[in-house]
Every structure is written in structure tokens, then in C-alpha cells.
Length: 572
Figure 1 (cartoon, rainbow, N blue to C red):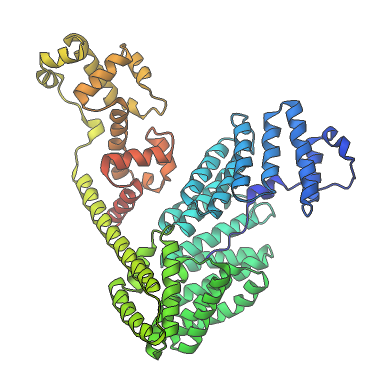
Figure 2: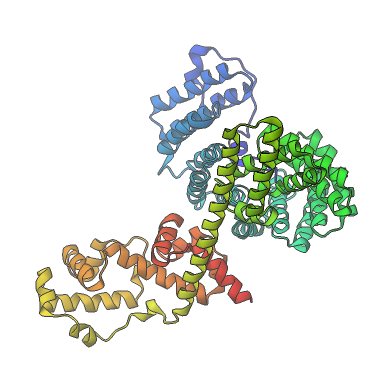
């Protein structure tokens, strides 16, 4: 249940808006960059004028051969477009601003590109760009670094259903911003946003007391800063929280207070949330007709907006069962169809949907019920066989996906238990006696790689020292660099690692890093609170993707799963 409408990087970039002079077209390129930008902003209702100013901005940057002003110009140009066109101009902005050490770029361009990708449901690519924005801002723009981190958390929580992972990031952002001047215009809105995210995440995880704590804190801050929109958002969120606590009458009081404001603010997402939780509260009180009325309003808004999140899917289960009891086959089928249509869309983006579907509407029973229902309606209205086929395929696909997820979960658990049984410290670890190693190397092996026995033994001994010193944690490591350290050449080193370690140099280094990571994660609870990006840097990788890929290749499970299961064991 979210309504994060802010895009702070855009707000910060476009903040200074003051200008009044009229300027002749022929003189535009003679104006300072700041003036051109202000003219662009002032004419936000006139795209034609804005194009004139931004084209002059870019022409001036080209004449000055200034990469950073070219980057800023293409960023401004991207604001006039949506989708692929905007992404194209943002890519230009990123290209020109790389290596400029600018405070805002390319971080702002990466972030805006991520939002455009998110709007196209390209969620994984969006996360990649938010991470790039975060990394770009890490050194010289710490506020924007946490803005990007917060955007990553929102995407993980709202679009991918990874609430637990997002909660860790929300807490990092909260701990950073709480030390700022949180009641000033610069920081109050983002602080409210983060508190709301924490409250909402705890509610999603059914941690009602923690959710209440943050709802109260957020409400108090919103009162102090006179932020009416967030005052009522926190009232609404606490009302929803009371539904989970089964305090239905208290919940109704809060939600009825908030609903008119959600409508007045044209906050469509939280208007849906208001009707959904009104429905759940009335359902809890046994007010069936009121519950039906509110769940139908959720459906009506969905039909217009074509957007809904898994949190609000339970209303469809209620409506399907209600019309089944009433013997109203038409409405029963109508809401089953809507449910399945939403399901087929959300399965692409929400990993939690399978769990929710199995919990709220058992697939095998649904299949049998639909088959019977369709047969009955076919006799009455001669429903097309094509429609029946589509419905059955959707259900079978849903069941198949659920079975696949179940098997995958079993496989992950088995691999996790295998890893936990490996109690020997492997990185500290691999300290075999050199004489034992020697006995295993026949003269034929030396001959097969064309390197003398003496050289092989020298390099193997140095490799042993390299391993024991954990030099593999150096993120800049290359085979040439290691060869120089070992006083040999990269060709010899590659052959020896291939022959005696049984793997390529890259795999050899990555395996050591992952083995070391497992030991450290087992032994150091603090590391389990790190982001995947932070863990990647900790263990010698350049980014989260390369760390996750190497971890999965080595262990056949994702690092996020390993950390989550490890935490459950340690907390048991």
C-alpha cells in the first residue's frame, strides 16, 4: 500500500526557478547555461518553447565542447519525453557525464532512467540502474546515494515482493536521515516517505506492533511539519494495521477519516487501499453486504487504472465465494476471470504471488470449480470453446508455476543444509602439506603442460601462500597481476591452475571468494545486514550481479536465500 509519487533527483535538479526576461531566439546561445535552464523550466506548459531552449543549451555545450553541459542538456531533453525516447536521451547524458566527477551526474540520469524502465515493467533493469545511480553518488553526493538506495528498496518491496530485503535498506535510509534536519523542507518529505515505507513493510510482514510504532512516529512528524497528505496516509496505514490486529471497528474509524482525503488528493493507489481495507474490516465484523460493496469498488478502480498489487487480491476471493453462495454464476465467472487476468500479469513481476494464490485460492479446487461452472454456463449461454480453453490453460499454467516454485524451494533448502554441514573453514583452510601435494603430481602431468617440475612446485607453493593471505579478496585482481606477484608469467600460471586446481583462473578466484563469504556470513551476524552490493565489495567483487552469479554457480542457491535462512537458524 504505497503512494511514492516523488522523484527527488528531478526536484533537486529543477529547484532554482526564477526568471522574467523575454529573449530573442537569435540570442539564445549567448545566454548563460543557468538562464537557459530557467527559461526551460518557466515554460513547462509550452513544449515547443522548451525545445528551443534545450536545443540552444545543447548547441552552446557543443560549441564549448563541454561534456558535463552536454550531459545536463540531454537530461533536460529527456524530461520532454517518456519511454524509449527518454531512455535514449538519458543514455546520452550518462555517456557524456561519466568520469566528470560531477556532484549530480551521471547519478541523476541513471535514476531517471530507472524510473522509466520501471514504468515499462522492466524491473530488473530498473534495479540495475538504481544501483548504478547509488554507486555514482556514493563518493560525492551522499544524500542522493541514499535516495537511490531508497528507490531500490521501494522497487524490491512494491514490484518484486521482496519485503524483508527491502526492510534492511529502509532501515539504512532511516538511520541516515534521522540525523538530518528532518523538519526542514529539504528533508521532511523524504523522511516521512521512509517512515511510511518502514510502517508499510512491517505491516506486510504482519509485525503489527512495529508498524504501529512507525505510523505514530510518522503522524507526529507530519503534524509538526504540517504535511496534511502524510497525516492522512499514516492514519490510513494504521487503520489497515488494525484490520490485521482484528480491531475492526477502530480500523473503520481510521479508514473512513482517511478515504475522503485520498479521493481529494487524487491518490488512486491509496483510494484502492482504503476500499480494500474497509472491505476486510466489514468482512471481519460479518457485514457481508458492506464488504461486497467495498471490494467491488476496488475492482471498479482497477478496471480504470489497470494497476493493482498482490496486497489487494484477497477481495476477489471473497467476491468469487460470495457469488458462488448466491448461485450467481455470471458474477462468479466475471470475478474469476478478472482474478486470473491479474494473476497472469502479476506472475511476471511478483515472486510472492504463487504463495498468495495457494493460500487464498487453492488451485486444484479452483480448477474443478471452474470446469463445473463453465459447463453449466455453456448450457445456458453457449460459451465459446476458445474462452474455456484459455481459462483452463491459465489455471494449469498457474498450477505448474506453483509446483515449479515448490520444487525450487525444496532444492534450495537441500543445498542450504549441505552448505551448513561443511564445517571446515575452507579459505583459512586449504593449507595442505606441500609434500602431500607433491606426491600427487606425476612426471606425466609436468610433461603434459610443458613446464618443469621445479617451476610447477615453486608456483604451487606461492599459490598456497597467496590463498592463505586471502589475496583473492583484491577486487582489482587479474591473472597478470597475480603472475607478477608470484614472479612468473600469466601463461604458466593459467596452465598450472587449469591442471592442478581443475578450473580456470576466474573460477579459481571466485570460488575462494564465495567460500570465504560463506564462512564470514556464518560467523559474523553484522554482515547479514549488509546489502548484496555491500557484500560484493566486501568479498572482492565489483558489483552485486557478479557476486550473486558466482554464489549461485558455486552453491546453486542465491545469496539472499542463504542469508535469510542463516538468519532464521541463528534467531531460532
